[in-house]
Image (cartoon, rainbow, N blue to C red; front, side, top):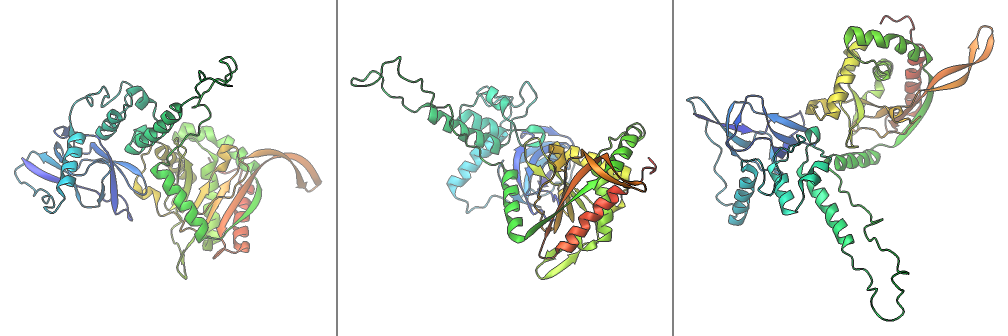
Length: 442
């Protein structure tokens, strides 16, 4: 038998460490090559890590909640074979005995096999929800029922309840219990107290504020948005574009795209295509600031702000967007948004953006003032398409007609993008949309 050391894998160019969210396998269980063995969180994304080798999970070295550097050991796998690979370094002999005892206890809790935690909480519920050993042990400690766990909306992969979800729920539950336990006035005391019929019905929990702890992704978003406002003086320019031709062509082409290519055509790839063309015309929008230097980016990598079912926001990136055809962009947009919403993105797909698009129109908003994704210098918000009466210039004179209109909101970093460049860029995007070729091949 060979003993193989599994290490924290590298999950992106700038990712140097990962936090173990949950182990999907227990010690002693068989694992297949490429089978997901644990869930890891980085500052970019939560992702499941597959086993590099088939065998038996012999030992777990990194507990749930531990943050481990890339390349450091996290588990031992026993495989069939003759050549043994050295096991990890022994534990630090200088480690505090109490810390060591706690570590052993935690590891034991996290690696206990069996279907429940001994208090009725199953490893996998009837509805198919997976509860990690750490989540089950917290549930047991805090007397949280299986029904309560089932009702929790997890922020992990495929809605899995993480350590952070259950701890946030515990805080909220304690607050609620404290309010409910508040003493009510003694209606039986003598004096001028009102009678029972006059006494108002007291419902202490009613109207109580709910305390919701930010999850990890919300905290990161908050920090980055505040930092962006502090770094970049934001200016926003607005243009209303007539997208009547775009709407007509899209309605004509959508069935062909679906039947021939199996993809649903939306307005997003068409708009990204126009933005890419405008970036080629105005390459100084595709820059970043490094100290006193302006770095003009060669690649055109378009980020797409995407709302998740949890309410959080994530920005996957289409790298080299200028190299895609419209059908290629459509497939890429559909794929990347679907995987973003199911927490299946790779860390590399969340970095390297040079310009970002936010479709506020999908929420029925007509315009917005988006915040720049650092270190980029500009971002565009796309508003909802609305039919409006408009003045149309014709050779025979002006006339009133119904047109499809859309607001484009362009926020840019005034340190390096002046109003002229910022305004001309968004107007150029509108020009490409308004001049859309109705005879374009589908």
